[in-house]
Image (cartoon, rainbow, N blue to C red; front, side, top):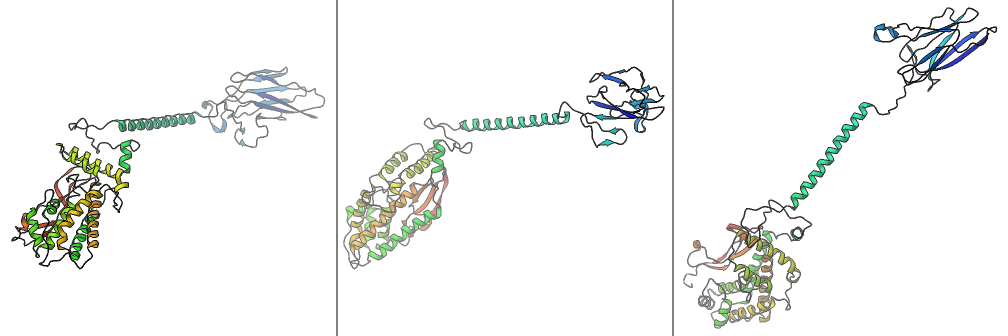
Length: 460
């Protein structure tokens, strides 16, 4: 006895997988080696099974694998049988994946199995159908995955397009000039900063970014208060109230009284000559000489402000354009000009080379001529003059500080009606007339109150 094994490659219809039919039979020694029972040709949708001589193919019979009915569309594969000379029969069943074939033989002396050529010794199998036959898919991406990829690409493209549109819209809006319904001033259209702000990389943006921050009100008020204290201490330390003393220099007094002094020069002379009112009068003289010359309306020939600044202020203040737009331009001009000049004029030391020194020296000479007759002879006179000069220089520095602010500051010398007839303002109030954006305030805001001398009815 001998065993005959034959392998046949089979491709069932509508199935791209290749299968191998292994036929095993026991052949008596007296029988010749049989020819293959069938010849299977064709691939992918067309299969031709040709029986060899001595074999026949019976038609397929319906079968219901795994207990299903034949109406489910599953059929059994054709059966191939042959009869050898010894009266034994050889049969095999051909089945595709997902179907069950039950070969029928007269003498069950042979068995058959179906294996996939891609995995001849596969250990994974279905108990109901035999070894599983994995399928080869020509497209590694399923239809669901392809649909997901398409949707994702569409969403990503929409997001990129939206981002580009937003970027271009912002750049276009940034370049568009701000609209204003206001009437242009001398050919210039006012810019409303609430609508748009300058590009930080543009010259206007660089100016706005590098301008120094405004000084706090507390600092400005503190400087005004320290100037008052310095004047008060100087008068109490270096001047007397004795009945003896010299006469007032009327020429020097006229020079001190230059400008819109709220007191007549002759009345001021009378107050200086009277020991009862002398201290008040000397304080008024020093304060007026200092404050009136740092006022932005002072004449350039008297001003303690830088000469170039005082000249421009005279031209600006003489303009007929007294509008919010003009004040806004002046506000920015003050801040920019002070920033450009701060290296020259912001130092605490005011030397003889400073352009303001000439006007300060002239004012010091006139002021000293007025108050010298009443100086205390027991104190060093050179020290008195030096202290007086330091007060004027301190006033000049304070004036430049006020000029450099975007807000508009002013001094109020007007005697309030509530003070009565015998009141004299010996130190003015520091008031804010315009805000940081150059807008005129409806009512000036008082930062430092006036200092008044009362009970002068019989002297005024």
